[in-house]
Length: 385
Image (cartoon, rainbow, N blue to C red; front, top):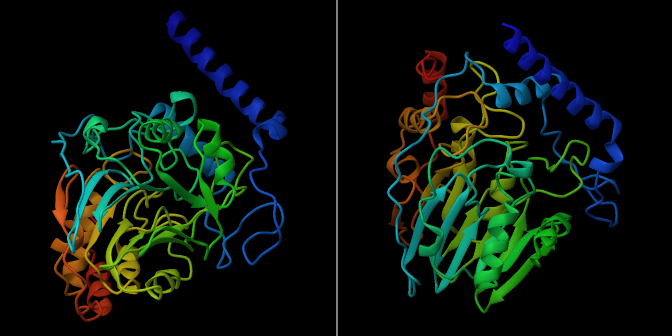
């Protein structure tokens, strides 16, 4: 008992010291990542969502979540310690009208089309957090780094650790020298890994080569690397313009006003989209949070994009919230069926799988939202914790 008391006392003092440092050193923890003119989403100091705040969480709730991440929460559905993954070996290049996609895990997606290799929010590290602390990977990368083809373009949506992994970005830059595109302020963070990047505002566009360009587009989220540097750098989605149909990457996002998917689709037909569906539940029964869409809102994003072939990402790799391991894809598949849709083209892909994407065609009819709401109202998804 004496040993247990000593251990508990030591843990208590560690937590107290941690809180004191976070309170007493805000100027050390804060960073100025960007200076520029005031805009519709920048007040001169911080970025913000013009359609409302994305972080619907109190300080007490945030501290509780941090405690649960560190010491566990027996009330959460169990997750596996490890998930079996068969890593794929994508081709070196894809030319002509073909498009190949490989889900590496979480928000990391390899898209190959028109002779261009594109990688989104690349994370090969085993943990996502400062100094090696944070949620640990349960699924190995779907492509071994040594099997990854030469990358031409890297998209970094924002500065959260599970999307901006400086170690991986450094490895990619050292090996391939890709063009790294991100949103305002994130250049300051990425250059800390010795990696140059192009940081653009929403609506900013940069050409990679004739017929291939990247446009930074709006999303609904927030950013931070520490505690008091919240929203010092911008978050975004992306449209990559390609000769045979565009690629849309949502990054990390809540629904917000729900208009931003159509804004992205207005840049040209979306051939393929990567849309997040996980880390949406922080309280029991929650279907979405301000900063993360769940399966229900993912369907609305998919609809706003024109219902293209899509990959459901941001689940099953790092445990960030309290839904069960397979709850997001199971819920998405069931909700798509309720809406009269075939889930295979959205919820049917696994980590490490390389699959072909067809050329853009005629969009299917809009989802049956009334049918979806009837399923939800009847409690069809209540058992999916």
